[in-house]
Length: 326
Ligand code: 13P
Ligand code: SF4
Image (cartoon, rainbow, N blue to C red; front, side, top):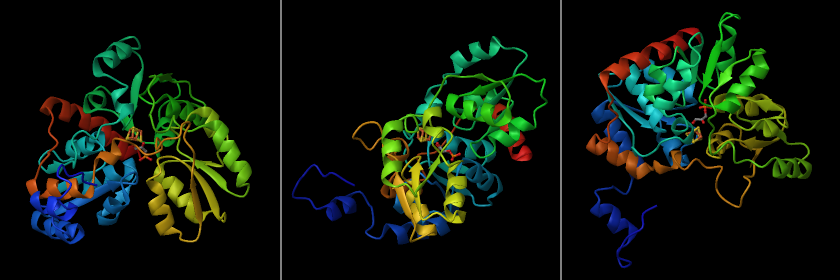
């Protein structure tokens, strides 16, 4: 949505003045061919972006797609750490992020200097980091995981090997519960997933007794304790397709509901309520990307993801390890 400084200028004229065509969908398709580009989008992106994407997925699916693509240009409709992962896997390709400010509160909750000091206090531990972290943290890690493979990966680590898990304490706690492994947790969290109100969730369930509660493991334990199913965004989507239930209370970023409604029309998807009267169940970082910015990024071949070569090389190893172990 554009806000024009001059109220007499129509949105159409304003867009034209920025060189944005009326039919953005068609213009993006032309640019995809011209640039030999692929558009990868996370489920938390706005509906229009999901509809223009060549592939929509969770963090694991997106990194697998980025690792195998033959396209010359990767347009990453997601947040910075995701586009950074695509760049680490494709150092010679152009990786574009529609808005470079699309960060992540969880990644920000783990500053590299503080994490280096934390790691130094546990020299015999290996570091398993959730993909929602910066390239610097990845470079200090032994294995990267996502919400869809964390349990599987931790189960492959010898039982006598102590583990640091960073940066999400909620995912870490959930993995400890599922695997029975003790881990040293970094105290980070996601602003979106910690926003859900347990009290309002229970009220919603009472009002919709037949609806199943499906939740992302980044949510807090008291919220997860009410869930009928816990999983990554792709796992939640698959579950909602396969379950015989007709209604679901969805406890994750609300953007995923677009795909759920498309995949299983007729079923009811109710977004779980945040604590306050806000749109806090929409990730403010993810929502910085818009279809207009995506088009402009392709047209200008900018903003581009870049990083120091030593970090890029060091961060590649734990990502490759994840892809091998998944
Ligand atoms: P997944 O993509 O692994 O479901 O994680 C959700 C998320 O918070 C991405 O930022
Ligand atoms: Fe980061 Fe949370 Fe937004 Fe995902 S939803 S990008 S973890 S702030």
